[in-house]
Length: 364
Image (cartoon, rainbow, N blue to C red):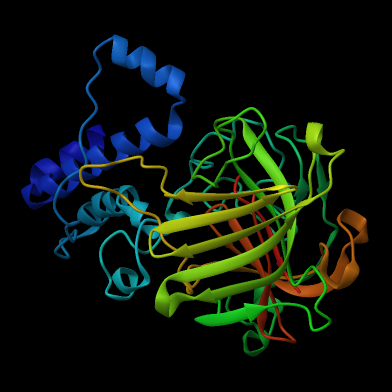
């Protein structure tokens, strides 16, 4: 901060963008990095948290050299909340903050300190040192925060990025409109392990967040069908949820998750009772002005770094299992911050995605 303040002192046009970036960072720390118990202690002590800036994010920089570029890199990172809290239209229009900053300009990751001490097989972030290599950060089916409580997938290095013909590599982009389901109508066209902050003792209601600091919930599920249409900012998944823990003795339940714009509806069939929940995926973390979460951008991983080609086990697809029982495929590995994604050079489609505190996703 001392270095930033010194530079801004010589470039006063950066003062307001820097101040607003600090406010956004403080709000982010308060909402995402502190549990409610800690927030309560700070409230008792009379701590005042800045409000979010009311105006639109300001463009940073006038091309005045390396110092200005250094400050703008910091500012743009703090403004990147809208990477998730934005519509595709805002992203396409180039609204500041709606595109992820360059993680390779940082060397201090993981940003949340990796509180569960996961090894580099389970977690490897793009902004940490040493830089992530092939077959690192591959993850698998996890069921608790303990480092060993994961069925890690198998992985073998085929070729580094420099040794792969770029014409055979497919960028990790979703189609703007797609449907995923098995041709035989069985479960498993799309499968995932959902990971998110624990908000109740039994992990009934949880949603992925942007760090791994609190205790996390884990739930594996597969689907009959998944729909995605970014032109309508909408998605729907029809799930079968595999009960675990104290509920493992009961039959599995079904759930339909529908999201349109900033609202999500969760319809659960709980054995003999039907339940419908209307949810705000952003968690109502801010109200004035409000912040909202939307369906992921179709080109979320457009700027992901290509690491190279691997032979890796893909969980669940085509009636396979997890870990050493996954379907071995030769895939291209990309990384974007803590996201890892794989594309198939044959089908030219995204097949697998992993983020250690958000989940595992596989497309058959």
